[in-house]
Image (tube, one colour):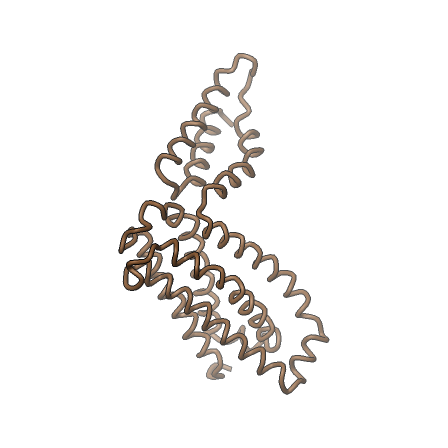
Length: 250
């Protein structure tokens, strides 16, 4: 692979992991990378520039650099999603055990309690997200900084999302065939994935520059668009969740 192609890939990666950061930080990082590329090409001690191996070896450092420049709330949200993913894998294996399923299906109390906890978790999680989305749109809490609203809301998002994950997996494993064949469950799953992606894009992207618009009554256009998507997608998740309860398509 030619050095010019390797340099293009390196520049693309730099633009990708600095996306959404304040302009001065992004330009400084790009200038630093350009300096490294120039030195790699003009170093008399190196017969053939090893740009791609250096890029591959520095990917983890680049990700860590980006994480250090995130807002505290964005960093916490990223860690929450990553931890939730790991818990999801571990919980799935444990909850799928026959003994757990037998207890869930044969007990007169366990299934209703799990279902109620799932509904309460959804209510809390969606309520918190709606509050943050409305502040982002400038509809409510206009006199309160966006970061202050987020700092009070996001610590409660992690426990409520964990409750939703665990109880949701229990409900699914109790009757997997019924859920998979239900089109509303498929709609819910797709909307849920899109909502989580939108949440990550917001916190890892536009919210990284919250200091620039923290005091403004209205957030930037990108933030408002993300908030609208969030409200629509979570509404679809909630409505589809209620429709899943009916066996119209079984």
